[in-house]
Length: 631
Figure (cartoon, one colour):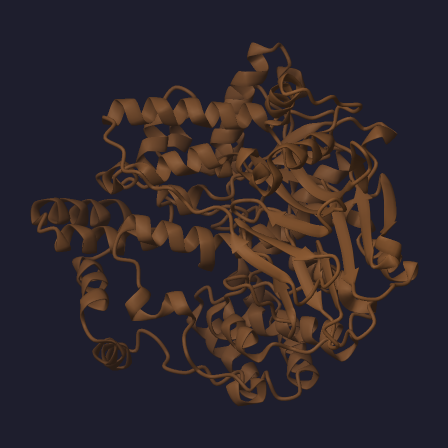
């Protein structure tokens, strides 16, 4: 796990440019660094190394292979590198290190651009192929590892990086806000849903995409293309067969992600996903006689409704583990809010990101360099309650009214949703949008327009993002899963996870995002994911006898959350002060009515992420736009 940088130019570039880029991301790779000058200074590669596999100096990057005509800077882990290595050895390849990096380079040498199709892992890399005079950059299927690019105003240079802050000292750089993307964040809490970022002119290579270009004309002669598309072939497995295959694939995924030459731990929230990982890993380690090596880290919120200590202890006691704990507080958040924002590069929508930060901070204190976490499970297995609506719609469209009525009853019994919830979900899909908006206004379910920020000041249009529009609204569980995985939810969560972990020089691995497991889950029928009111149904069945029953049969969902509404009420003055700062710092983007909005949120005593969005947007805007990244 590392940080990368690359510059390709029609002219010779100075060494200082690439050095400054990697110096900004020391946290991503504190163990080693390197740069490489190629093409008489028209191509530069930079690297910061966090040593995970083969921690010797043999893994130093940028790395070359064979006759020195292939060079690479790479961030990530190829979990099946041993299997690929054996396949390549049979083809006549030889290796001088025990790294997955060398395997990746040899894979490119063997299969060219199609090498990515052989990889099971998370990765973002840039390869310079001097034989063909091209560069090739790619990002893993889900976009677990980041890859950004910026083109200079004169169109002579393209730079690629792990983090946006790396561009800030390059010639021609000037940070400017992307108004439409900022609008999407403030209005919808949405980022990372397109290749654009909140920085004008900075783009990301999306998950499952690659870029290739000419070393002679790196900007004009380049193309970006999608190398991976989800393959959803409908499964006809029985309920028992599906649960058994889920368990096998999940075990395989966890086993692969335990490959490491440094300490491996697990995030444990007490929920279904993280507890499943911890218990499965415990079974694997017990089989190898290594269960004493297992460590967990948890965030707790004592004496609040979001505290999950009882569930965490249930897992720890059943498995005989001693976990580490951290208790995030608003006072601690206020002390480091600028630091977290700097690491995130773009604003974040909830203080729950701070809880995750604290977990990785504690893991770092405990010398855990690799951590397993549960991202992706909710999106794949219909873990969010928002999945009920497309399930009801699908049953309605297919005329399965008896099944619709049965699930509606279960939804009411287990989750407390009235039958009107079912009706609204169906009406929102089939009725014209203007009638839906009218209904919202009549029953005051949703404000038509927020007044605490100004779309005009952002030069943005007041239109919903693509996947928030009626014509793109998910009509099946599968539709919603794909939207959340590729566009509206998971990409944002993966950025949070990457920056929070790497800020503490930790590699985060995500077993649910093994593409074999993901493709299998997507192939299953909707009723295998939501069954008689139970979310993640097939997983619950598969984990019978592995998970404590108290966890396996949980119906509520929390995760690493913070009691945000309690924090707002107890720290009203602190939040008011920060909102006033945001109003001043953003030059009218956050408006004077923001303070009144805070009072309304506190009065309603309901969780409302908009308060933190305005606070954090003010911090981000001042740090990156006003001060151009110079704290």
